[in-house]
Structure formats: C-alpha cells, structure tokens
Image (tube, rainbow, N blue to C red; front, side):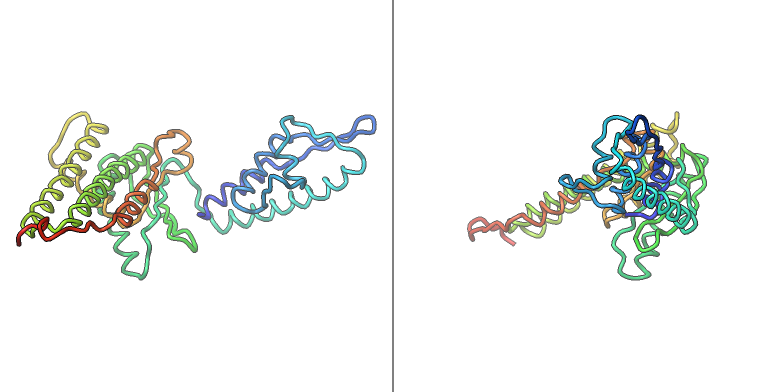
Length: 303
C-alpha cells in the first residue's frame, strides 16, 4: 500500500472521528456515529485496527449501527469514553506525523505509477526513460508539464504531476491504449505458444512471427489514431507519430509489469478512468499452464 493512500485514510479518519457525548434521564448516548463509521472503515482499510465479524469490540459495534446515536447505560459509557479518547489522541498524532512525513498532496493532475519489479539501479533508470519518452511530448503538446513529485518510500510507486486535468486525462488515455496493446500482445503470444506446441518448420514460424509483429504494430497505430481523434479535432501526421511513440513506450512499461493509475480525486470524478491490470496476469497464467502437445513423426513438418 502506498504511503499517500495511508495518509489519505488517516486524514479522513481524523476529520470524522469526533464522538459527541450527552445524557438524558439516566441514559447516556454518543452522537455522530455515522461519521465515526467512515473513520473506522478507513482505519480498517489500512490495517490500523483489525476487523472481525464475530468480534464485539467497540469499533465493530459502531460499524454495525445504522442510526447516528448510540445509547448506553452508566456501566458502558466510561469504557467507550476512555477508548474513544485514546483513539482521538492517536489519530491527532498520526495525522501530524503522516502529513509531515508525506507532504505531497494528491490533485486531479497527479498520476501514480507503479514501476516494474526492480532488481538494480539500471532497472529504475530504464523504467523512468520509458515513462519520460512516453509522456513528455504528448503532455507538453496538450498544455501540461511533466514533473516528478515523489518516490513512495519503501515501495516501487512514483508520483508525477502533469500540470493540468486534461493532461492527466491524456496520460490515462495513453495508459489505457497501451493496456489494450498489451492485451493484444498477450493474446498473440498465447497464440504463438499454441503454435510452438507443434513441430512447425522454421520458415512457418518465421512467417507467423512477422505476422504477429505486424498485427501488434497495427494495434498501436489504431490506438494512436483513436487517441488523436479523442483529443484533437483534426489529424496531423507528426502528432500521430508522437502518439504512436507514447503508446508504444507505455506498452513496454506495462508489459514489464508497470501500472499507471489516476489520483483518487480524478478516479472519483470518472469511474472508468482506472485500469484493471489483473486481466494481464490471467494471460500469463494461461501461457504458463498450456500443456505441451505430443506429436508423432507423421505430424511433424519437414525441416
């Protein structure tokens, strides 16, 4: 989990965890339960407190409430006050710490990139080169500026800003186009894997490989044209060439295992903005599970 996600959840919890106490005719109550539920859910999400459906701890009881008031007796209220006072104080300290330690704020212009698995310094450099080559010209042409904001401590996530909401939309459109190219690549690779199960001749396999490369280039070209029509009223060959480079380089990053995600703010405004990269893992699983085809001498192609 990224630190910026933990920061967001802690801030939400701090803003919402404010129990309001009162009493009436010997009964005690706590108001603001629905806001507290929001806070507790965020703390569950990031693992600050644990959740057990069978547990009867105070936080699980709050989560189960559908009204905004919890009514308690005199034996219960002090226990809740003590526990919730400790939580309020803890949240205050965590909020101060996380906002000092992670000063970067997410905006609509923020893009979160998960780098492929890194084994050495060259891997980081190569990934950053792919990102820069993919985005620098396309972001600048649409009126944005590409800026590095933060390397997420202890993880492979980096945060960049592109300076404009439309540029952030362009980046995610490039990523989605590259994702479709990656899906095409894995589909072609799966098909090639099936061909390899049979002992086809070298010339046949060479033709298949050339055809597959041509299909992949056609997919990159189709995605670039669709991108251009999405953001520009007229076609331009030079711009189209730059968009092809953007899609191709981003596809390389994704094929290596990289991921590109919008900020949570932009994602909330457009639910279709994010990409489900798990589908690409399914292709890899399929390719790994394909059995070898046993062929007889009569089935083999002459060399």
